[in-house]
Image (cartoon, rainbow over the protein chains, first blue to last red):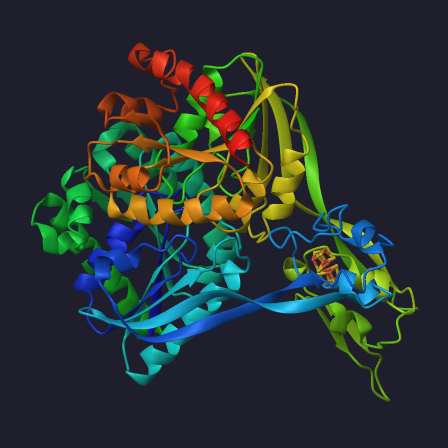
Length: 292
Length: 289
Ligand code: SF4
Ligand code: SF4
């Protein structure tokens, strides 16, 4: 079983649109949405939730005003400025390190476990889909990513699916690292803008750092041909294959409004390119399989 | 006045709005808090004059004092310490997984042998500069580093309250975003009129309510989708501060790293009006609470 992650560094480059189309094209797969704090893939896959789980993670300090003698030691010790001068703990700032509860001589601070979100196993027309919803203003998106990925892996093994398609989060921080760890292929979706290029370079460095094989897709490549050329040069110099160049099309937004994967919405040059991207990806995974 | 610019969904034009708003203001400071993927410098092209490495404190164990009692492992809420007790033949050791460490200091403070002191670990860099009268600050997280909130906190320490401050937040709704918008007077949420835009906007709105920052919406590329965002804004009484059409000219400027202000004058007056509108809304929000 092979795991493919779609990432982008910069948000809004078309990562989820591509993932949904790949989900429609690929056979025998499990899909996971790892963009847990702004999940969108479910809007295109139309899942019916089969199982729901609480995501418990981390703790938040609770201060008991009855016991508190207002010595102020916790205020001084908390490195996250989570305890105000009025001895009110700001749950958003609290990292849950527990130092305050350990040092309070009056036992006035208690640590309470957080329910920081929910995750789901769903059925879709395209196969099993694992997705999540991080609670509002909650922490630990990296951990939730690991949880949903593990669940997807278990399903894939049980149902003998040959691949897992992962829609990754933007950025390069903790949820992204959790989303790409131990994957077999990272597809980086970029766009021909100076920001797109800048962010792609950071993502390429990150996949390199974690030794994940990477390929690049240029979305809306015809919006700035000069920059697309630049991306091509950069990728050539880094020995990273470009597996697709998707043209700009106003139809993409319309397919979103209709809430269907693009390849099912219409058949045009965008569809053709996405199909060709999938064939190339299949080839890469097959090749890897035969080597291992 | 500190205005943050955020968006649940990435790629909706957050940086474009932040940059052009800054260019329409006087006596302004621009703070880019998207330390994972900072982009504003590509548009403002500041001359950087100061680079300050950003650290978090992580523990280091003095082997000679440590008797492998295991306290540090127990107190660390983030599983970043493992104590391997020694045997008859070999000494025990303490393993520190620095990428998991939040720098809370609990282990160092609570070690009964005083065997832990803290050392600095570089997680990124804060850069300060100037761009045509705009004071500029941003942070860059090191590749492979997971924790962006401490770096965001360090970037925000450079806020100059005597100026109009524009903060460009990262996309999403989780910890890095909260760290960026916290303590700002107003937040502009940039979105687009698609189901993705709406879905992520709703999450961002919930987040801002929790953090207690008043907010309004800028609808970008308002003509590419449907009227879902408009309806949502009306139903929930959220002000729509500005609407920008899909404009190939803007897209082309953006792709080259150029701002709208100074290149497409038809948008000048809209951007100039924004600070005034926001000021009125901040006053109203203060009055309401
Ligand atoms: S648990 Fe840690 S972060 Fe939370 S209030 Fe206590 S000392 Fe501060
Ligand atoms: S400083 Fe806090 S998070 Fe870091 S290792 Fe020590 S107890 Fe754990």
